[in-house]
Every structure is written in C-alpha cells, then in structure tokens.
Length: 233
Image (cartoon, rainbow, N blue to C red):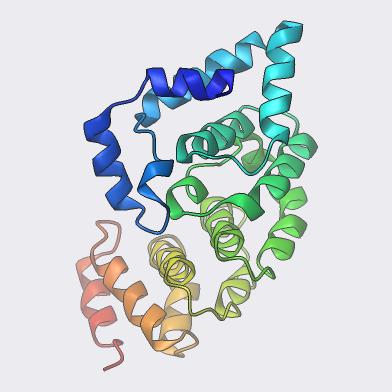
C-alpha cells in the first residue's frame, strides 16, 4: 500500500463504510474505505501545507499523476487537492486530466477548485469541451460548473442552450440537468421558465426540473402553483 492509502485506512470507520457504499451503488463496495469527508478535507490541507518540503511536494505530485486510483476516498482526496490549487491554468489542467477517471456522482460533485469562480471567462471554453464529451461524469461535471458559476452575475441566457442540447440516457447526467434548471428557476426565473413553457427538455428532465424547483424554498408559492400546471403527463 502507498503511504496515502495506509493513512486513509488508519481513518477507516467500518459502519460509515457500509453506509457510504450504499449511496454510490455503481462502484464496488470494497473500493470504499469508509473515511468521513471532513477528515479527508483536513488531510488534503495537511498534505498541501507540507508541499513546501521536497518530500511533501513529491508525494502530492506522484499521487495526482497516478491515475486511476484504487479507492473512492483517493478520488475524493484528489478532488480536494485540486480545489487548493490557486493558479487557474494548473487547476483546470488538473481537473481535465482527472475527469475521465471519475466514476461516481459523489466525487464528481465535490471537486470545485476555488479559483474557478474568479475565472469564469477562461473556464467557459473548458466547459464547452467537457459538455461535448460522451463520458457520464465529464458531462455531469460540465453542467455542474454551469450551475455553480453561471447562474448569477456571469449568467447569459444562451448558456442554457448548452444544457438543453445535452442528450443522454444516463440518469446521473439528466439528474444534474434537472438540478441545473431547478436552480435556474430560482435564480433566473424569466429565462428558465421560458425553457419549461416551450418544452425544450426531454419529458423526464422537464418534470424532474419542476419537481426539484417546487421542493425549493427559493421558489415562491405562486411560482410553484404555475410550475405544477406545466408538468407533462
């Protein structure tokens, strides 16, 4: 076992392992060690601080270069380390290298390099690349990025067309698309409701978007009443 794997197993909680494995049924249960996320984030920060030492820097570089990883927690740790990179070019290249090896929704949804928020213009070409991928979690990640960084001050209505244009039979892709439009209905009602009114989405994503929006506290009661009339039966 590698030094990092040994440390992860020292943090193992077997009861949590059984619980966590059930949440990500598409990966083997034996690939889940059972380490709680706060401990993983702390470990990532500790590793990052130690990169000032030659051995610490080599440990991180070797870990990030060694793909695919064996364990779920290694993938989470990889994502948490990428989040700590301050240089945008380095972070986005690292994310682009990592994406093809992501094999579940939990890892996909928990790697958000903090520098991305300040570089939405530079990030957009990468999102356009990722959203054209055929890989489930690369696609999901691209939609997640549009939801996370482009529904507030960086919003442009045309960005919604990228999500509309995604055609997939994958549950985890379409669930993220529904989450995107539910969030868009809360943040950019006028543009998002037009998509729903015009039925630009497949039926499943259309109805799931409405369902998730209705469940949101950010949608007004009047908006919820109207959205219920737009469901496709």
